[in-house]
Image (cartoon, rainbow, N blue to C red; front, side, top):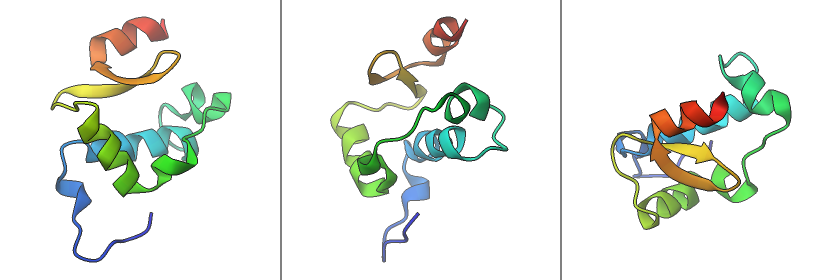
Length: 87
């Protein structure tokens, strides 16, 4: 992750979603890596840039309590739907 002078992203409400998304796709020690990175799921190059992800998150209506879901496309959803689809 590149640092951007005078920017504090960890205080943004969507920051944990971004960080966890990268963890589950790339960090082999992540508890859910086997379901994402272990299956070959990757994050698009654009979203490796936290500013680009932040703009997308705000444009698509991120609200506290929502999580990312990969259901044929990426969207914000409540966690219970994501858990149901995983089964």
